[in-house]
Image (cartoon, rainbow, N blue to C red; front, side, top):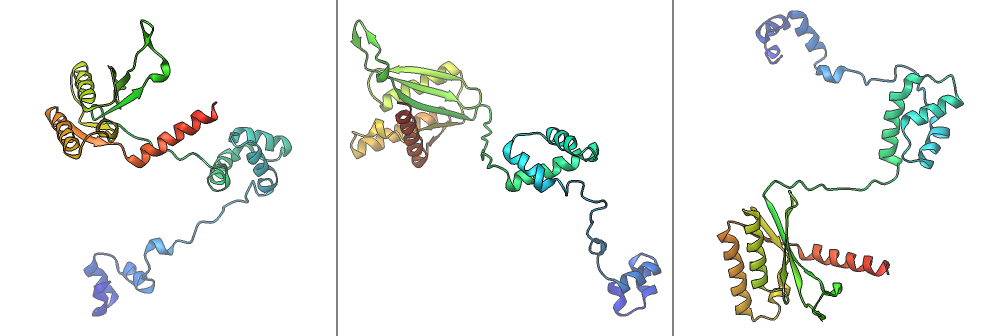
Length: 243
């Protein structure tokens, strides 16, 4: 009704494209239709008012995983006058109660991996296995490559410790066996492979690793150090507690 400032309601309504009655109605009450609606109240008495706090809530606390149909059967056994048609109401009330006052739920952040995007590499120390060849303990470890989506795996025996040569050889063998390359390759910080190297040699090894990934059009990424520390500590606590 912006035309109403200088014209009467009839002319303003005509210029706005609606009837004169609508123009007068808007002039009398300029609120939007959504603001005129009164909040919807309960149309019938609450069928669970007498049994919710005293009977249903104790059942939910004692049996957190119980289903609504089982609760309804028990309540109707105690109170036959309660109708079976309140099942939906009971289900909604139980969902709300569990969300607000029920037991804590595990929070899960699911990771969605795209096909061919993510490959991971790591070394595994196998000294605890005590593998021997001709009676002599074989000092070795395994290089392990895995695709996050498909679960493709490749293992490579490394005679010695972690090194750039072992990483490069294991990664290339894995890619040749796979017949392709993922978009992203993730490893740890490679500190074990570069620990005993001088600064210039360490930088040279880093450049060679980046060149290797560039050759296969792979983006090199590293595991977050804080996450790796928490994982190692968690595994250590698990191993100690299982002894």
